[in-house]
Image 1 (cartoon, rainbow, N blue to C red):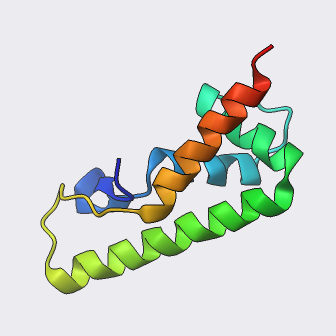
Image 2: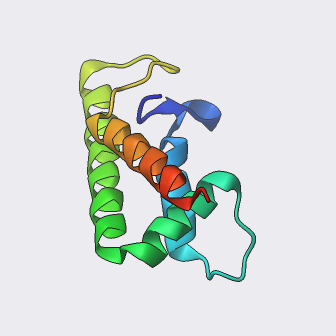
Length: 101
């Protein structure tokens, strides 16, 4: 999964992980979570500094990919690559393992 996905009317959208992290950061615990948001919320609760570092890293990658897409004339629907997303997915896997009984 890359940082960019085709959005509505040609706009670029952030990856699902980045969107989930943004949602968790912007919404109180009382609001219901999807499974992905639940993982992000557990990371935020367990290690807020690490959560914010990853969120910042993904945001930077997303912004860089958006700029690179405009500069290179990226066609609608093409996806950029995000190095941080792979690391974040590994972190989510480790969190899932830690949460299992």
